[in-house]
Length: 393
Image (cartoon, rainbow, N blue to C red):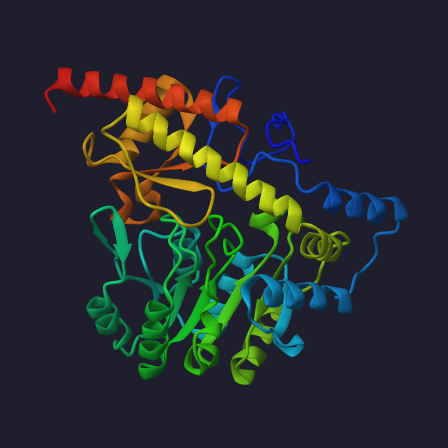
């Protein structure tokens, strides 16, 4: 019913991902190469054919779409008054940082983590405080001793949680989330939870909304959600935030409106409503396809590049590849592969020093593109090893 094998030519379309030299293959930024669900495209077509694109409001259908999806898919009831529209998760994060913290205060993040968190903190004159995740036997865990020490610092007033976590693809367990919430309440730290990847879990696995874990977690949290990663709609600038705590809710509402990121364009509401109301079957098919792509990569690396190791992942369409048997600096490796094999990957150090031995690979593409990328990866890695061995490093 849905053809994910179809290759869509995205060159010369103003695509950030594909704005690369003609012979280069981009598999970096978290942007799928699939067309969004036909049900969404049909709704967008109908909206476009109406032909009038004036100022827009947030409709009752928009609220219901989010509420119904989170109730049916994630077993969590979001009250209508908790929900606000925003043009994107990053604008929510940046606005919240400006509103809830002051210059010079610490914003805690758990690294390696989505690189834009660093930008949102540093560009607003706040300090990045890293709670580096423990990496043991190919899996990640929270270092709670370090977390408590850093949350206890009076200068630490906000924590950004990534749930599920990008780039490591981890779904945080209930007990870990509960401990994070308890520590943040103890030290008067607000949790800003980025849950944009929540629907891109492996088949049979579910994420746990941070606010659903306990009354404490609900009371200290601000949660960012959106259909954009799930349905490949990022360019439409449509997202939401829900905040159970009335005091926090008022502050973030003021922040979003002050920064003028709370008004939808003419397609933002239609896209979100149609995605959540009609996109379930497409999403199920997508997740199967992505899971198969992950298995293709795992088998290929095991057979052709056994020195590379994929971290066990439960969510996202991004693979986190341990390259420690080849190099301690994947920035150099990523640049080499791009130059010599025309494959554009993301170096792990972009997500903090804790990611420096990793590469991030996007598998949300057709099988033909994926196989092309794997051949380029093999060529680049093997040549890199030869050059490294000849240089004596």
